[in-house]
Image (tube, rainbow, N blue to C red; front, side, top):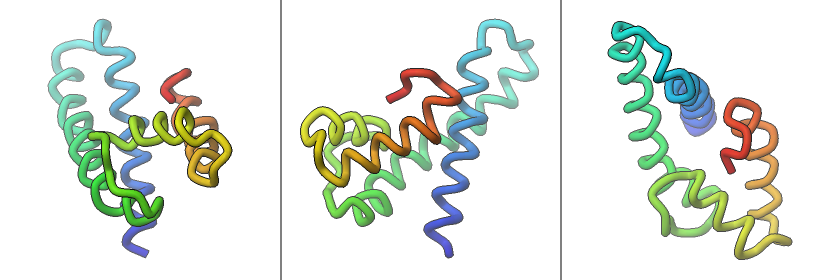
Length: 103
């Protein structure tokens, strides 16, 4: 259950973080200060999960810093593989709806 919780937590913090980033220029100072912490946590969690849980799930060591970079690689270098199909699913259904063309 813990891996699923971590993946859901990563996604929630991604949504919050990307919302803060996309609106950074129009946010008042208080929102920027408060929004910085979930954004930072999302990035740290992204890096840690990419090098641990995601590496195990994809059975492939991390060569990139973030999960998105890994998903890009799978789609670019092995487009017909199971990894690329999973990467496309994650991009289309979980990431791109909140940040078009994220991956």
